[in-house]
Image (cartoon, rainbow, N blue to C red; front, side):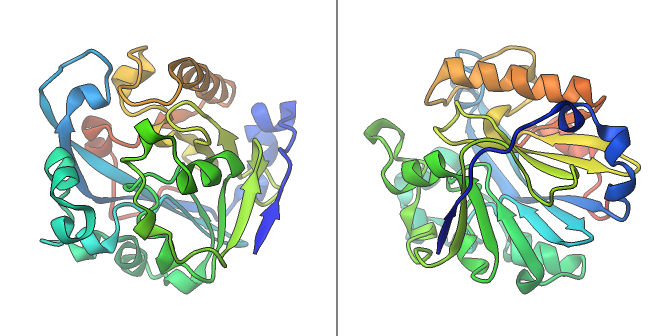
Length: 284
């Protein structure tokens, strides 16, 4: 079942209303975890910088406990690539290019179990985009509502030739009957300003990020691949982007939300930032 939703209007109260929404976000918690690591040419992240330098990055995922239901943001590498399973699932060329390292315990279902949740308890799964390291485990959540941009869903099923390599259709080939919410812009997930999807295209046609307001930690902008690392935040273009100009506009847009809410931007693949965070306990 597919439900089309128009873009929510992001009014001043959403853009800079952290204090106004603080009370309604009481009880929320967020966990940052990783679906293992990838090792790849760093210039794939930072265009024209460190060409040929191999770089190991985390594959960040998020579990957000909202009083009205658990939300997962991105589902990481497919469970099939755990251990020695990569070549059988992705093929040798792709495995050689990005060298995933993932134990079965790092897959999102086990990460949920670690904090006392089950996949059936997840109400919404929000995808930054459908690349193999972000939507690899969609099929572990048949009962959830899956939240993506309409443009991304179209691009995942029918990617342009030069950008098809990062989409693994085996990850989502059995999801035609899943409950998808197809967005066309920003969307306040629970209508209370606590979890807001932010459209941030450029890396892919329908990329989106997530703004989460926590009662103590404050506002976090979970960038997904709109901003890979701190170098991208500082202005180095994405090494892989369908539209560099759109990616730069999205970067500035996320910075605007960060500044308006006195928040932080959390990157998807920055090993220094990731290592500075806690991963065995919640941010509240």
